[in-house]
Image (tube, rainbow, N blue to C red):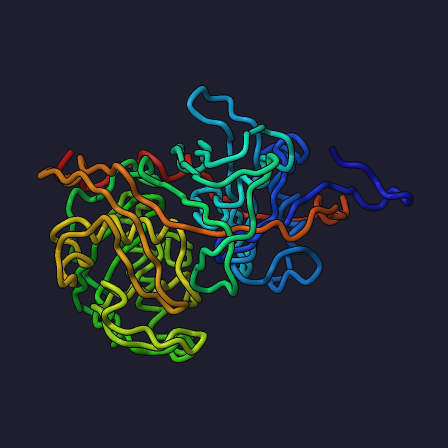
Length: 412
């Protein structure tokens, strides 16, 4: 639990910093920090370094992929080993979003649970069952254990992270409808969005692991060959994608007015193109034969440097269903057992075993996930000033504010 420094000015809390996949997060034991609604939100904001968007006076990374928190404890459920809450602390605003999960950070959860004595496992391969409180869904982490610790060294390589590590397979087969309760919240695999300028954009709104809206890159004025720097300089692109995000959120039943979701993190817009030869951010040339599709994520007012882990599951799921924006662009419309897509950081191999159904919201998965690596970076203490916590004003997005709202379902 927390304690005060010798001058009684700052509270001290234990924290572990873990790199999971292509993200870095702060990991806390649930019973060692304030509870939600009783100071937790202000505590996390202060730890990150709010209200400064650069988060210099805290442990935040100043970028959304390094401004993440995992709160972990023993599970209260019989079908899970660990309970895990994810919090996205938005760097550019004072918002804490409890309404989504991060697949990359999820890969660090079993490492932390083992290190902090929440479970004991013998040597060998194991599946750890993780209950994600944000989405109310079970996740499964397959990893190798030695001396009750997750192996770090290995030969598994992921795009966006130098070197290699021990493979952790994250299976999201049971996360259909994570944000809305349905794989296709509108009841359709493709929807028409009428923009304010009178143009029309066809989209697929898919909700598996995280809700994502898919569009052809050409629908937002892109060829798909642009570099991240070129895309990040296009303010008109982010305005158009913000409108698509808002209108997709309204179609999904998340908001009554699309303008209310313009600056949300979710649903991110994924610009999809068919396979083409392109150059990744590190200079690696990706041949068109190396991937089935290319996806680039627009998150808030910037481009994701690689690809969200949960978004990857959603992309693979959407690509596996006939009639979606992604599936229309596939050379071979059948996906599985391996679906490899390209993104700005390289390529992402996915494992997909889909059970199709004529009714789009009765589709299920026997296996849906990806390999990650994870590594503990630091185990230390963070100092927080109570006076700062008391004066911080934060905006909180909770799952209850969005889950279960009516959509435009045309199928069950």
